Length: 76
Image (cartoon, rainbow, N blue to C red; front, side, top):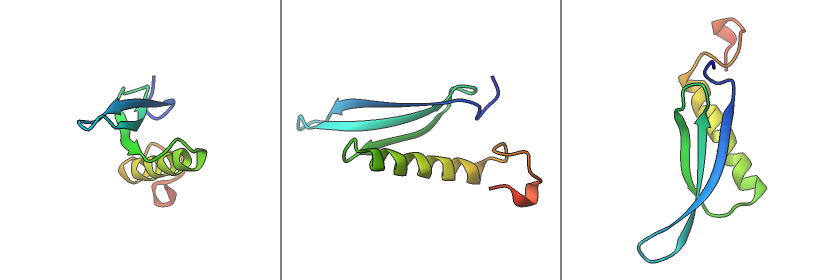
């Protein structure tokens, strides 16, 4: 499977040393199996998830030229 074709998003929880549960967001590229984004979240609100997803896409867009078939001068 080509890179950047399908991404998976998952939330999980992990307790810290004080016993407080932390929410962790992971974003994986199916083609390369690379972890694109791993971040603790303050909450599970839709707006929080969308912000993190947009941030991950923006970071990957700056790193990659595989996002579009437009000429290189108009990418991202």
